[in-house]
Image 1 (cartoon, rainbow, N blue to C red):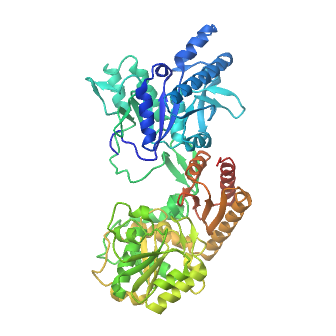
Image 2 (tube, one colour; image 1 turned 90 degrees about the vertical axis):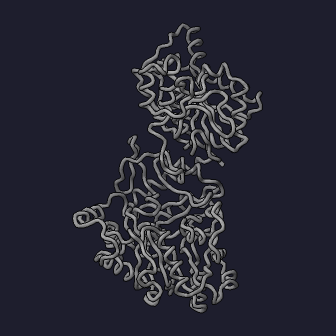
Image 3 (cartoon, rainbow, N blue to C red; image 1 turned 45 degrees about the vertical axis):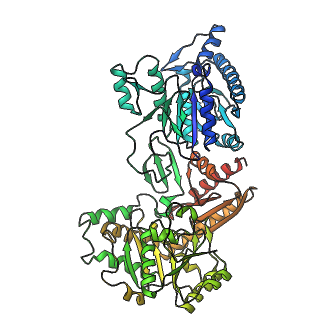
Length: 637
């Protein structure tokens, strides 16, 4: 992302200090309208320092500051509250007069006393009522928020506006927080500095480049960053022109050198243990993501850690020029727990599916491959072409030819399309990215019969469903008499180390001889050591039975507590791969779950996806159900 650029559908939090409120010109309002015209959602947070000081002085209450924070007595708190609400009302009127649709918002911040003895009624924001903000945004209005918080006991607290803005930006997962001042950014030799780190700012203050009134401005911007904002910029009123924000970007460190291919959460994880992740700021999160169905045994499982440590004492990498005993050992475990004979090791699910597509075409000497709408098979060119989602294809055309997408569970469409020109049909037993949609047994049995009738290979993509996730070694084993020609898997196979595998029947070996396919890192000894340790635990019948029982328990509890909520329309899945299908967009629900200490995923716009570790306890499942129930009950449609 270029400096200052905004991404479509980003939330932009704009913070205006009390002094700047008095001097806003049409440039500010034009910038807000331009943001909205380009599809961005804007949230305003304002202060009121000068007006509060004047009002306190009129009541003969001195303005005392401790560590830069206004000491707020009980008497002063009422004046602060009245003044901020008055300023909020005036600000909203001014915005509406400039054709900026806005709505004042009272207390959306939960707060705790910072230190009552030292600061009085001054608080720290602990959480944000994102639902209240979302309702206003959905109504195409700009929420205008006062920096006030409420404790659990109903006590009103004064919150530093910079800290409040940072907390709101964090909880909304806003990409940008703009700090509006009376200058266009940090000036160095009369030029606006494009980017400044904390260390750089301290140097500029020390050498006198930043001085006077700019010092508290940059320190306030740093405060916002410390309170969780993803990106903070110091800008002037006319901050948005030509789809670009002008100003100085304040960053904790130099701009990332990573391509922005991931919409990352603003959670910085310090370590994981079992079913929990712990952030750098000391918060504990119950992890129902598991690295996207990867850490099936939870984080830092002792058996996996020990196996990898032991292998590291021997060798890390040899290449596939050598026989590697661990490859044979893991292949035997996998094939003995599936209807297959041979394994090809690679590094990921996409690579496993790529190998399956190549093998199917080479073995059958045909080209056409059937997959299903809303499927997901990877992001390499072949697996992207196999994926039945237009959003995955966008911008990469033309795709590889001869991939056909059919509706899942539509036997008539399948029968009409199947013929002796089809090389393979690739299907997920449960579509993960497609909404946790389960393929019906009767449909899969019909599919298998048609494949056999036409000499077509049946490929089952078990990248997300395999390795015990659904309560069996592989999810296809829930379907009576189903025997795939090829199975692909990855994710949970090595509990966090990179490993993928394509499993196949013996007759396919003739098409995959030396030189036909390969992988430099495929079957790496460290990953295989992790896989062997993981599989020896997961493929135990008693362990798989507990996964099945846990899945039934979790679905039953969700149906008992969540299914009655009006906009929840389905609880579905298999084992510990569960989807809560809703009639509303659930992206803000995921944010609220995070605030309450539970990590979950979406599966499309309307489905909450739960992928807990297979080692999850009943107490931890109960904890998750309580959080989900509370969040959904408080969700405002």
